Length: 115
Image (tube, rainbow, N blue to C red; front, top):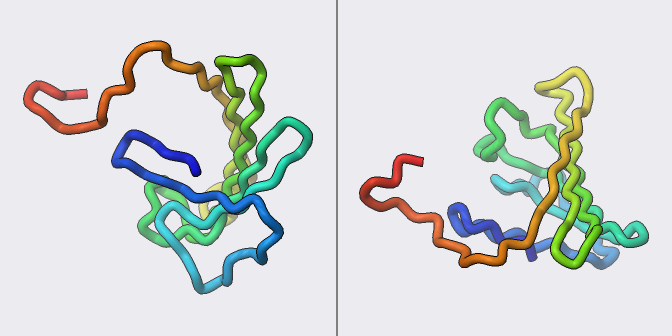
């Protein structure tokens, strides 16, 4: 499971050999399947609906994410977006995920929170 603090999103990523999701089944964060390639967890997501949070994308979008632990406190995160309904070609971005030593604060609205 991948849990994001913002809006408390939880994505369940099956790692078994189950079939791909049916074409008519969609969710706003898509449906994901994962597998290991050596030391890298690869998560492939498809079946996004029209309400997905990636502004400008279409229901044809697929996202491939790669999580590679490179140190005890760091994961390299790389993702490729393929959406022939929006972009001419797939594009890729990456960023390090560094373990936080401090507290993880709840994502919540409160007075004075203008961020």
